[in-house]
Length: 68
Image (cartoon, rainbow, N blue to C red; front, side):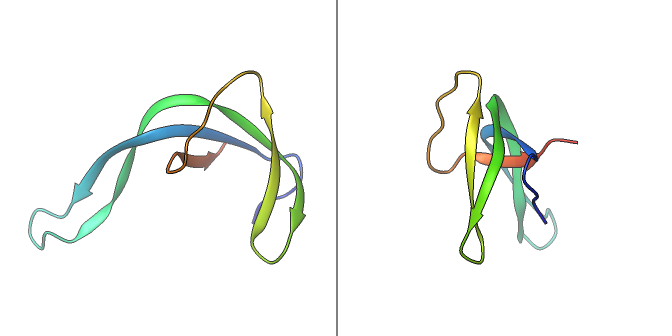
Protein backbone atom coordinates (compact mmCIF):
# COMPACT_ATOMS: atom_id res chain seq x y z
CA UNK A 1 0.00 0.00 0.00
CA UNK A 2 2.96 2.39 -0.12
CA UNK A 3 3.09 5.18 -2.68
CA UNK A 4 5.91 7.40 -3.91
CA UNK A 5 6.30 10.30 -1.51
CA UNK A 6 5.12 8.35 1.56
CA UNK A 7 7.23 8.97 4.67
CA UNK A 8 8.18 6.18 7.06
CA UNK A 9 9.29 6.76 10.64
CA UNK A 10 12.10 4.46 11.77
CA UNK A 11 12.37 3.17 15.35
CA UNK A 12 14.61 0.80 17.25
CA UNK A 13 12.83 -2.40 18.27
CA UNK A 14 11.08 -2.13 21.61
CA UNK A 15 9.78 -4.80 23.96
CA UNK A 16 8.10 -7.99 22.81
CA UNK A 17 4.44 -8.23 23.76
CA UNK A 18 3.10 -11.65 24.79
CA UNK A 19 -0.51 -12.65 25.51
CA UNK A 20 -0.75 -13.22 29.27
CA UNK A 21 -3.16 -16.17 28.91
CA UNK A 22 -1.80 -18.07 25.93
CA UNK A 23 1.80 -16.84 25.93
CA UNK A 24 1.40 -16.29 22.17
CA UNK A 25 3.62 -13.51 20.76
CA UNK A 26 1.57 -10.44 19.77
CA UNK A 27 4.29 -8.26 18.29
CA UNK A 28 6.80 -5.65 19.30
CA UNK A 29 6.49 -2.10 20.58
CA UNK A 30 8.26 0.94 19.14
CA UNK A 31 11.59 1.75 20.71
CA UNK A 32 13.48 5.02 20.25
CA UNK A 33 12.79 7.21 17.21
CA UNK A 34 15.75 7.16 14.79
CA UNK A 35 14.61 9.22 11.80
CA UNK A 36 12.56 9.25 8.62
CA UNK A 37 12.81 7.94 5.07
CA UNK A 38 10.78 8.92 2.00
CA UNK A 39 9.72 6.34 -0.60
CA UNK A 40 11.19 7.39 -3.97
CA UNK A 41 10.76 4.32 -6.21
CA UNK A 42 9.58 0.71 -6.40
CA UNK A 43 11.18 -2.40 -7.85
CA UNK A 44 10.06 -5.99 -7.93
CA UNK A 45 6.81 -7.09 -6.35
CA UNK A 46 7.46 -6.08 -2.75
CA UNK A 47 10.47 -3.77 -2.59
CA UNK A 48 10.88 -0.01 -2.40
CA UNK A 49 13.78 2.44 -2.54
CA UNK A 50 13.80 5.26 -0.01
CA UNK A 51 15.80 8.42 0.68
CA UNK A 52 16.86 9.32 4.21
CA UNK A 53 15.37 12.61 5.38
CA UNK A 54 17.94 14.46 7.45
CA UNK A 55 20.79 12.59 9.07
CA UNK A 56 20.22 9.24 10.68
CA UNK A 57 21.74 5.81 10.89
CA UNK A 58 19.59 2.73 10.64
CA UNK A 59 20.28 -0.93 11.36
CA UNK A 60 18.83 -4.25 10.22
CA UNK A 61 15.87 -5.05 12.42
CA UNK A 62 14.75 -1.43 12.89
CA UNK A 63 10.99 -0.96 12.63
CA UNK A 64 9.34 1.23 9.97
CA UNK A 65 5.88 2.80 10.40
CA UNK A 66 3.96 4.86 7.86
CA UNK A 67 3.83 8.48 9.04
CA UNK A 68 0.26 9.76 9.17
